[in-house]
Length: 370
Image (cartoon, rainbow, N blue to C red; front, top):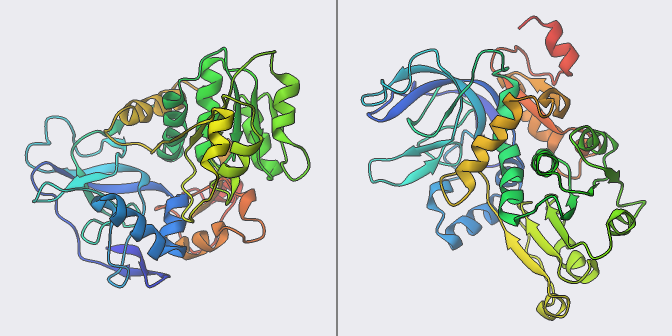
């Protein structure tokens, strides 16, 4: 089978052995796979990525960069075969939003796409554990449903923040994770919802998803925009979804007293700030992870998909490009942080039914008839 393999920083399409499902596993065939900011970090900042996981004991997401890694943990897939013990819950042909976990014989749970022996959704076929997946009902696009996983990270940040309709919010960064936060904030009736992002395209989508104001931080002060809209005495919650260097410390120094900052943007670089600044302002800072089985994470996965199924937002707005598996290297290059035009993309999906290596607009992809 074909797979996009990262080896020592280079991504090429190679032939790999066909996987087989063991007991309690599913063999699946990806439909659409998103490239995550974490994938870009694993590609560009491999040493820092691995160091963070070894330091925290997150051994389910470590790999040998010289051996060859098949990434992809944001994806939808169709079941090809259910292993022993999985036949009652899953059947061949089921379309799933995949919870990207698999358990090895020792009991270690791995995230597919970040493990040497468990390729991710950038392979034509792979095995996943037979647990936690969301079945895609008729009437819901199995391609667009691939945005569920990154949105769930933003949803989880809001759930963990405890924000209610009485709270004001600032979302810094409106990539897929930040947009997930906006969708959940809108569902909760939070007001005002202010979004800060230098991309005009992303700001426009944030407004369509329920933000009340969206500003370019290079032009306007987003905190001032919040102050102008917030009722007197309202507490500010900040959802930091950008991962921008130095932003956490800057927000601690400039946000109002008693602000709560929830960090969901996974920056690889070390940050520096003065703890006394947070003490003097009574600032709370919390770091929140994405979908999984811990705490609120699985609930967020379900809730993000519920928002999609019920039409609370249009997922097509945030999918700004498509490519076939042969275009994986081009997609990574196009999304590389710092590349001109990179922030004008929101989510590029790799569709396994598309030929060629070119990145297509949604209109061009539709015209292929695939």
